[in-house]
Length: 142
Image (cartoon, rainbow, N blue to C red):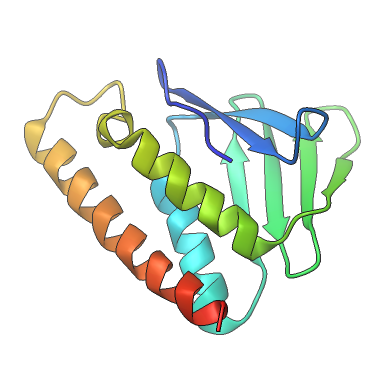
C-alpha cells in the first residue's frame, strides 16, 4: 500500500500493477493518518477513509469490507473513481507491513524537520499505533 518514502513523497498503491498508483506528499503525516483511519475503522465498524495530498491534486481512499474505492480530485478535471477488489483487512495488513518495512524512513518522514525530538516522537507514535492496529486486525480475524 505504501512505498518507501523518499524526498518527502511516498507512492500509494492500491491493487495490483494495474491498480491505482498515486503520490502522497510530506504535507500530511502519511503513516499516522493511515494508521488512525484504520484504527478508527476497526474500533467503530466503519470504512477506513483517508485523503492524501498530492500537491496540486488529492485523492481519497475508502476501504470497506467489500472493496476499496479511490476518488481522484484534480483542479479542473472531474473526479475519477477507481475500484479495487480488496478489503480493509487486507489493506490494513499491507499498511502494517509497509510501515514496518520502511520504519527508519517513516521516522524521518518530514524532510524539513531536523529535530531529533520530533523523530523520536514520530517513532513512538507510529510504534504505538502499529501495535494497536495489529491487535484490532487479530480481533477482526476471529
